Length: 201
Image 1 (cartoon, rainbow, N blue to C red):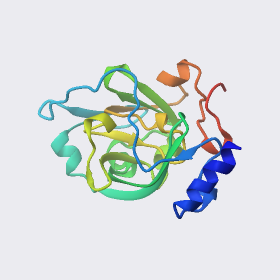
Image 2 (tube, helix red, strand yellow; image 1 turned 60 degrees about the horizontal axis):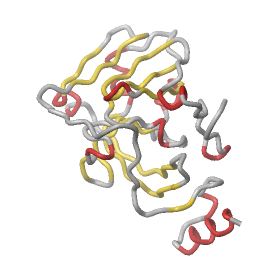
Image 3 (cartoon, helix red, strand yellow; image 1 turned 90 degrees about the horizontal axis):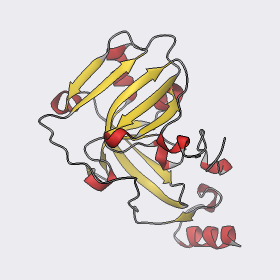
Image 4 (cartoon, rainbow, N blue to C red; image 1 turned 180 degrees about the vertical axis):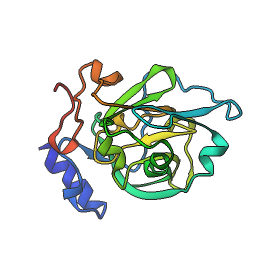
């Protein structure tokens, strides 16, 4: 019954109902959800690191990050709390630009995103290489708001949105997987909304 009502609302909004994963409903708003408080950021002292299984570990200032080639894309986002938002435009830096600088080792197969307040999110490296993945500084043509991860958030396409860590400070490349913050609390490691991989492995 829920699926039928949700699909009807998607169709009434002019979208293809097939875009909505099972168990989700469409919203035009962008709900704010996170653990902890919104951190305060001073861009004068802020930096971003890439380390681990790389030839050249890297630390960038905010200005240096902004000097890298920029990309943007449009994609649907899906939250584990069951809302979906279509056609969200993100802008920022694609991983490929950082990969040129840090040169991942052949052993690098996984990534742990490190964010403020000791939050982490884990994904296979191939997810970061996806064309729609991004280290985002902007959403819908404007700088990210603090509530949505300003100054930098990870965007991992096609996965529940907890994998897209807010307030990103570092990427750690690893040879082995390591559960992130929500995975340690029982969330599914793969987070595929089309399979409803919300909890458990």
